[in-house]
Every structure is written in C-alpha cells, then in structure tokens.
Image (cartoon, rainbow, N blue to C red; front, side, top):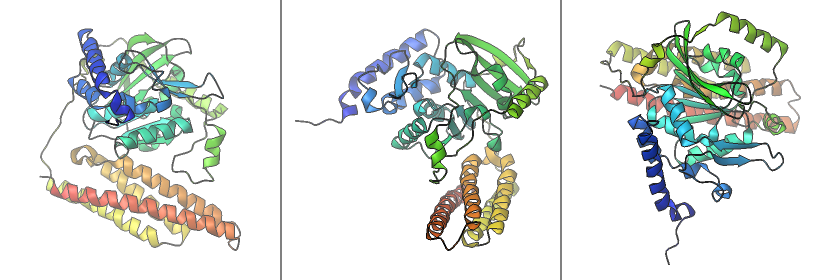
Length: 412
C-alpha cells in the first residue's frame, strides 16, 4: 500500500480547484497579470495553512482562509485574504522585477511568496506585530526555501521601516486610518514609489493606490473593502525576547502624544491629489530596464563591498566596544554609497543592512553587559553568548558579500 504524505494525498484535487479558480478570476477580468497567474500556479496555498486548520478551510475557493487562532482570545484570529483580494493587492502595486517591497502584516507569508515571483530581483521585508504569526510565517517561508528572499521582523507595522527606505512599493494588509499612512508615504521611492492600502475606520475602508513623484502624491481610490485592523500590539512574550537575544527585531508600539503630534504635522505637509489620471498609466506588467555594465562603476561597487568585508573582519577581532560601534558605522556608510548602484547591479542591500542592524544590537547589549560586574559568572556567560551570536551574524554577512562580489565580477 502506498503511504502518501498528508499534503500529497489531496494535491491532485487541489490542482484542479486552483485552475478553476484562476480561470474564474481571469474570465471576470480580475486577474490580468500573466506573471501573477504563473505565481499562483507555482506557490501552494495549502503550505501556508497549519495542519490543524486544513480540515476547516477551503483552499482555492474565493474566500479567506484561516491560518491563526488564539483560543485565549476568541477575537484573535487571522486569515489569508481571498484570492480575488490578493489579486487586487498585487496588481495594484504594479511590481517590477527588481522592486523592493515592504509588507505590513504577514498574512502567513503567502502574499509575500507570490510577490517574490513578481519581483524576484528585489527585496521583500514583512513587518508583523504578533510573535506567533511571525514565527509561523518564518517557518512557512523556510519550507519553500524563500527565507533567503523574504525576511520578517517583529515590529509595529504602522511605523514602517524608514531605516531601510526608500521602498519602491509598500503593501498594507489590514485596515489603517488615513492619518497613519503619512509616515509610510515618506518612505516611498521619490521616483514612482507606490503604496496600496485599505484606508478607513474599523467597519469599512477604501483600498487606495498612492503614487509618489518627487514630493508630490497622487491617489486613486479603487474599491470599498472590509478588513480587520492592522495588528500593532506587541505582547508580553515579545518583551521577554529582548533578554533572550531573539533574532526578530523588537520595537515599542505604544503611541505617545509626540507621535500623534508628529502625525498631525506630517498630515499638513502632504497633500494627496485624487483628481488625476496619472495612476491609470501604471501597468501591472513588469518593466525591464537594462543598460550596459560600466566598468568604472563595477570597480567602485567592488571597492565598497571590499571595504565592508575588511571592516567586518576587523569587527570580528575587535575587543574595544567603542571601536566596534565605529566599525559598524563605517559599514553602514558603505551600504549607503552602494544604494545608487542597487538596481543596475541587483545588489540586495536591505538584506545586508538588516544583518548589520542585528550586529549593532549585539554591540548595544555588549556595552550594557560591560557596565555590570564582570566577575559575575552569569554576566560572563551572557557576554560570551552575545559575542558568539554576533560573530555568527558577521559570518552570515561575510558569506553573502563574498557571493555578491563573485557575482558582480562575472556580470558582462
């Protein structure tokens, strides 16, 4: 008797259900991007749904699919959006092959996996407030070998990620108030960056597409939707992760009066022009920009990469913590210089910067530990652990940069 894997046992019927669903979306003129059709076919939705929910959901029917439920709080459940809604989201972003995409709200990683197929040369970062959902998402991406292309951070999604801006595209997957989008708009690429978000109050929102050109913003309201609010609460278990040196990024989500005042000031500075046809010209088909490789630029890129590698090697053996901070700052400056070559040489700078941020966080912990009694065995043990973790991150970054240098040297 053939013993089939649980997923394998119902793969065949799901394949046909998927095809019927896509045919329906195409016939109804919802699904228009050929790349997205291919992505839907290649990415298995069922891999993003935990086993315990597989009997409760109906994958490849045009409805949301449950992937997370907290029995301690009956209202705390999360779904992967219905396929027609995912189609509208991803086509509304008009992703190009080398776009960097920031996704606010994980949705189990399924939307990010599809987006990677549309922007394979870009970088995708997910911000998720709920640690359990973040871990589920990370595991899902790892199962499909997408963890090198898509990263996830536990962080307040409302703040975005200005330290890694500019973003060519930003996707908001939960309801967000109008005043909350202004900090995100500031993080868009000035050369045609697009934000797509369900903007409005708790009960009903309008999915809105906003394009940035220099310091002007053009909006197009697409359709009315009903989304659950974007999760922004960091739970107690995430605060405990700080002492556990967890690799997920931790951020305080509490809004202060200063935050609200800053939002109000930003609101006054940004005007979104809705009565315009400029967004009608955005296409969901990939735009390919190619130009011959400039040898002088190649040498400059390699020089910056070598500077980073040398600084990392010095960081590995540096004992003085103040010097460690200086070396990290030098590396950050080199990454900033590389940004102008990012698209032409397809360098994944944001990935490097995220690893560097983790290295910097270990420096901060090391400095705090040095203020404590160094004869305390617990402190010594913690310091050794932090240094080992930091060296591990340095080695990861060194390995990535070494591969990048070989790749860039081989580009014709």
